[in-house]
Every structure is written in C-alpha cells, then in structure tokens.
Image (cartoon, rainbow, N blue to C red; front, top):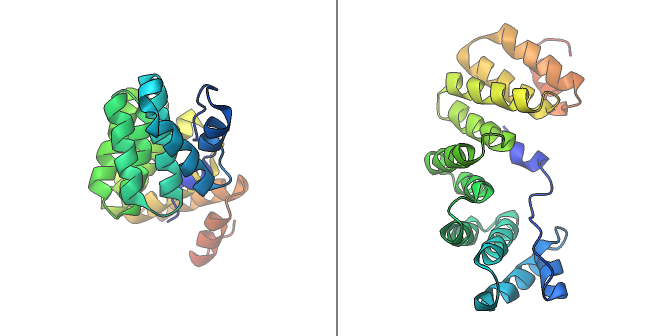
Length: 202
C-alpha cells in the first residue's frame, strides 16, 4: 500500500529571513541538494539564530534527506529538531515516516502517536499510523485511525482506500468495497484497480 504522506505537500516550514539566500534554499522544495546546503549553512551558524529557528533548519534538512532516500540522516536531523523543540509535533511525525522508510513500524507508530498527542488535528499522521497498524495485523486500530482522518478531512480519497484495505484485512469485503468505491469517486485510482481485482464495479 502506498503511504499517505506522499499526498501531503507543503511540509517544509518557512524560516524567518535573515541571510535570505541560505534561508530560501533551506525552505524550497524542488531541489533537495540545494535545500540540504542551505539548511547546513544555517545550522553551522546556529549560535547566531534563535533555538526554534535552528530546530526548523534541522527539520527541513531532515525532510530533504528523507526525500533523497537517506532515512538515517533524516532521523538524525529530526532527533536534533526535537531536542531543540520537544513540542515539535510534525518533526515527530516525519521521523515516523523516516522509520517507516527503514522498515521499523514500531518506532514509526510511537512517533506518529507522539505527534498526534501534541497536535490531535494532524490527519496525515493518523493515516500513516493506520497503515502501520493494518500492516502489523491490527485492522481495528487502523480503521479507527482512518475514521479520524476522514473526520478531519472528509474528501481525502487515500484515507478511504486505506480504510478499505483494513476492512479487507479484517474480512469485511462489503465495507471494503464501499470504501474503495468512495475513494474511486473522489479520484483515487489505486482503489479503482482494487475494485477490479475484487470483481466489483467502481
């Protein structure tokens, strides 16, 4: 199953403009190498900026490393961002994504749970945790998490597809098909393919 996080954009967090070019590089999302260089420049001058801004620089660099397929460096940066700002909910969540990239769903679930504890409106991380619950054999918890995603964002098609998968894991094909149909109606193509595999019409 595809991760929900790929459908979320704009996770880079803006830093205040101090040295404009390094800050612009650190927060832009198109060129990950450029982002890493810009964030690194800010980090090396960490004693000159506010602690929360330094935390954001580590966070943004962690995002860039994660998207380049280097979860170990991403985790190290998210660790530092959290050390500097222990209430940085999104940093816990994105560290969970990095742990998922490493194939460690238990640590990922712990981080998603901490992110949700700090900010109960982070729909994305309910969804990511739900995927891990389903993949580790707990479809009931997965369904509860997908229900929360849908409550927070009723038109987020991948959540219906993911909940359909959890219902399928649970052995409830009727509810699975209903969710796949809803996801398809909202434009989520993988659910349309799953309906075909189940012999059901979209």
